[in-house]
Length: 424
Image 1 (cartoon, rainbow, N blue to C red):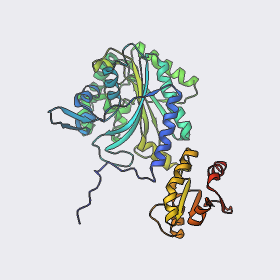
Image 2 (image 1 turned 120 degrees about the vertical axis):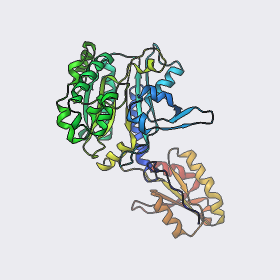
Image 3 (image 1 turned 90 degrees about the vertical axis):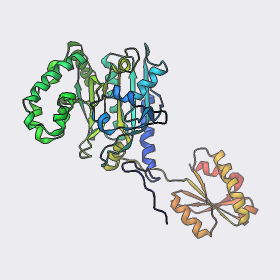
Image 4 (image 1 turned 180 degrees about the horizontal axis):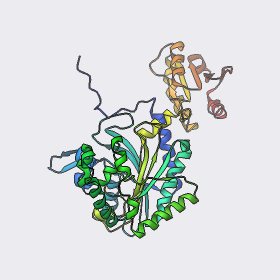
């Protein structure tokens, strides 16, 4: 027997018993962003490697250690996309969507990072992202955050997630803060772990995001970015807080919140939970006013977020917040005898025409009534239809209730659709 081929580690199948939960979450996401006037954009899974080096930053963990990059047959370096914002900006620049325009866009799909697989963190994972371009004021930051708050309301997650905010200021303010932070960290080099030492000169703000508890005391006493904010960023951040307070969105300030991507400026935020252990970030985003120009476009303010669908579905499952999800079928049609089997598919097609939206499964493969009833029960259908040769000769069919204590009845095929419509 040939050796069985299995999925690549960290790249998982989504099985039929799981897909209804995903479809439910995706439907809520789509409906919510549509209610705010956002439009869908789709872009390729594979992009030029240079796109992510220029946007995310060459000294970030993603670019240094996690990207799936390869040379194609032309010798170009290509990368499976590790995140969506850079792709969205590239597409917007390429197709003339961004300069001197306002765009509210959303996207969803698989992303790829070579990380150590663990629950809620995979090598192929799925993100839902949203980006707003062309608006520099804090009200669009607030709208993006308020939209995520509405998502949690729709999904029943409001009691289980908390919003954390910070401002990274302008690039000039951040450069001044970077110098002060490096000077402080140099005084504590002996206590820093390997990751922090590696990042200290290349990306020192990421040291603040260290999860090493041994560094907590040192990082707590580090200089605060808020003390280095330029006046414009400070006013922007104050306005954002005012707008969120007015909208009833609770938040806390986290001066160590920096995000792992180089392109952020001013507002950064995360929605976090304590229900998933180490994988506590459910949704994250912020403002990235310099990225469009950095990738070859005209200067355009922008803000957005991304959330991981695997982690969101896992959180809903952990908290038992998923609704009763639909079965595979609403109606299961059984046929007994050759003539009935010949007619069954045509009967089902007429029902699908007359009852749009109803899921109708036809038994295939033959078998006696007992076998077919077992399949009908397994399908989850509420109604079973039994078409025998005698019924067919009389142009009738038997309706049997599979989940309710009601007597079965035999009705004319011409009246079947109306009878089932009344039971919807």
